[in-house]
Image (cartoon, rainbow, N blue to C red; front, side, top):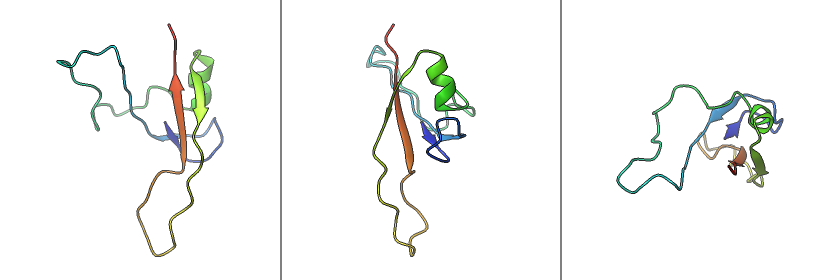
Length: 80
């Protein structure tokens, strides 16, 4: 999940799902498959027993660039 700020309760702006149990014949989540994130925030996912890893913040792009990476990335993992 990518958030608008480093606050765990801030809005999700992007997300991706990967399920290692999905067979090669089945398709993983693709960009644009869902309109709504699975959780409104990382904090909501934590309340649903997801483990969270905050990835290091990458340096911001120079001011002459308009595009770049999303700054606030969190990896969620759940053990059943």
